[in-house]
Image (tube, rainbow, N blue to C red; front, side, top):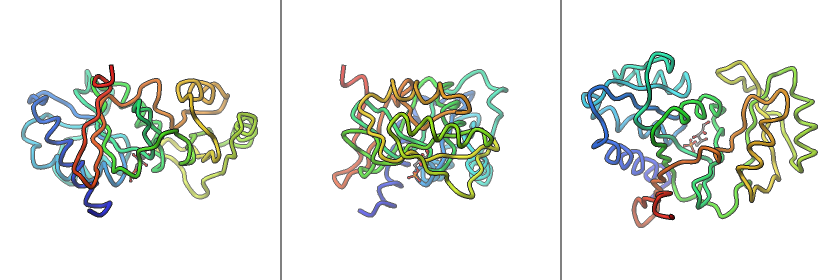
Length: 227
Ligand code: 5RP
């Protein structure tokens, strides 16, 4: 199977997984990126089974609307039954690196509001230790150089993502060569640097379930299975 076929398979698997949890009043949180797009395209087929969605980016909102799925402001909903999103890397504890598409802050906010976080990814994203993928950090523009110097002190090599402005009007530093054996600790440390809006480690709030696309089919990995 190609990587695109694996993305489509996990997008459909996520729809099959969430379908029994949906009620007519349910609002679904939806992530950003090419894998999330596959989910949105499959979700359209069951749009009559739930109320609508909250989007983690302007691009996702546009795609949802193009399928006729109502998009709500997060402040106007009581909660989200589930959040479905892709990832750039996942370890076995379902701690993630996200933000390759620069949507990390809204993704983290929407994930925080959801009863359950379902991550969908092809097997290339499954790693033993996070950090091979450069860690995205969203930064207030005037703090860019200061934050970069602080990230160097943590052992990383930050690179300014040229030409990218987030949906929130900020910039992204991609931190290379940061080995992350302790994601919860590093997530907290980076968030404490003044000028950081958020970083792409989803460890304090990891995924609950991973639907991983492999050549042998979609594997479901749950945190609860590990306990
Ligand atoms: C966007 C993200 C994406 O989920 C992540 O980059 C994965 O993208 P893709 O599914 O296109 O590989 O975090 O900010």
